[in-house]
Image (cartoon, rainbow, N blue to C red; front, side):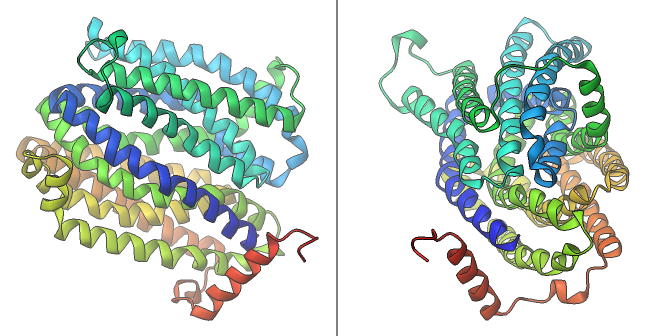
Length: 449
């Protein structure tokens, strides 16, 4: 399992570290600079509404499927044909709820038009994530790595042409936030089609299966995962919604600009958690393999924490030149927000390790309780600080909530899995060399051996 984890981390990190920084720090920054803070804040607040509600497109199925297929790979064919049918049904529910929420928030025609496109993007992205969960469960990390970046590669090409290439007469002479959303929809659509073709061939998929009893069984099993994803999405993404309502589009845009670099940094922690979930699911499935938990956790804990602490301190020290580089002439307004929010990388990194471990172990009730408390903390601190500090207040609210969640998950993991103090001991260099050599050996073909 450790060899598979190391191989999975290598391919996922390699693919994403080559592509995602260019997307986040190149294209997304270019889009915000092109359309301005107010228009980007308008987009970002509606995007976060669609993001929070996208749990209705999944209902925890993706995380459940990763864990289930990792433990029972023989079920891939049966579950793929049935769950794809569920995804189609959930699209209708998502559209109804999203537009109802828009109506309650007082959206006009302009907001509803953007929301309609974003609901399409969220459905396609949710479909991609589900299809990738099958590759993850089967430990096919190279395929997963490809589909984790294919959509971004396509978006970079499309948006790069629109932003910096010759102006296309089809779109007129000015780039707008809508062109950005159209590009996302096209890229997600192509990626979903290719991923479906590949996993469908591996699983022997011939048609969708409409079995309502199967639907109900899967939804019942995935319900705790759904609640957890909803609560975590809420406390991670509710800040711009509150900012827009209480301080306006411009404040939401400033928060989005500072948040973007944190989003780029947390990408590393997220990518580490992708192969962790199926590996932890295998290790927690039997008592015999639980003995490997401590060494596996230690293998990812120290590298991730060294990266997180180093990135947070460096970001705070060099906030002014970083923001000035990303937003020429306007960097100063982002600096106070970024200096606070960048420290969120530390608790987020802990959450991706110990939250993933608890999820793999099936301790969803405790995680949901912690997530609900975290959401309450986030909203309370936001309501207290936004009137006084604006976007900086939201940054403090996010950091406070994330820190509570991380500490709670760490303590629960130590208690439940009886992790010894040696788990958090800095690994010896020779241990890392031995693991690397074992992983490289496992990748050799029989002929090479």
